[in-house]
Length: 215
Image (tube, rainbow, N blue to C red):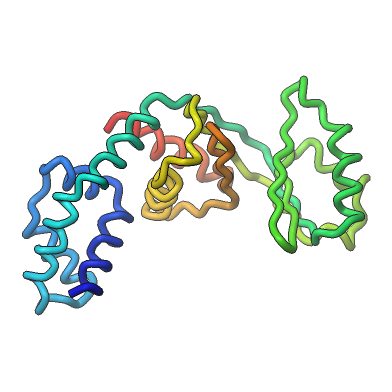
């Protein structure tokens, strides 16, 4: 029963449209249960699935969280950028030193872009395609592990700290994944959420996210 409950709740959490309709009491529970049972080969456990859905529907904490997320998205400001490139480096002291040099060459006043993503072993930057030559002039070929052009960015500014609001990242990521859009990179910093995708998917990405403001 516990495993079925966990699987059913995971399935609902990964579908923003179903989750919203369910928590608003606007979906047929039996029909949803049959869909989930068919998807996961659990047709013999239909009653258990229905029970799990009803527990989800009655979860006050989830309702409150969903309402808060939709309110934040509706009030957010959106912007997009095209013609971006990503550059992947192996993290070391020399790369970090050269990134400092690169930073001083970026014309932020003119609207140039420089996003820096750092993890334990790698550093990736997002930069305007017309500044790729700066990369080639600053770093040697051995230091550049990968360079990808034709990327786009959706920036969402919620105008409030969202780092303590759970579920926003998951909702947007799940919606994009459900529509076959791969996120190249993503980051949340205080009130702003940056999503990097392939440029050909940028309009679709924006439309999917913006549609959530109409929900």
